[in-house]
Image (cartoon, rainbow, N blue to C red; front, side):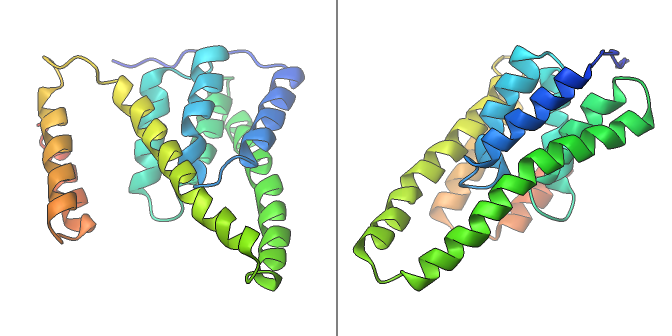
Length: 194
């Protein structure tokens, strides 16, 4: 049975969370999932506000819900806040972490996209766009690595790794729509196979 560990947070902790998220927000080039390893390092590794299991569960819930993948950030805030004692602090956690995440990147995106649209013919702008592809790809691989590190016991998690390998080959070699693969994974999870 899972029990919720109560944590204590001061205003200094909340401010630190907000400021850390504002910094990460400016690095979220590939979306919220691309900075997930840095969020994991801070929230789980450094502050110990969430466990690996809670962190991964937040990602799974956010990805299963309709909407942008940045929902995982709101769930992190909710989970942190709720562990301090009440639904009200859960809502406070959502507000703090989402404002920290959304304000800087949306402001920067708004002004940068206007400038890029005006200057799209410049060689430097085209080079920048091409140069961002490997960066975003590397950030997504790092995010996958953090999620996978919670399942590093091959004798226990062999079925999960088999599904990962089969899914990767299917995506690489066929034109099967990703929603079918997600449905298959959800079905396997529902029946407790993975």
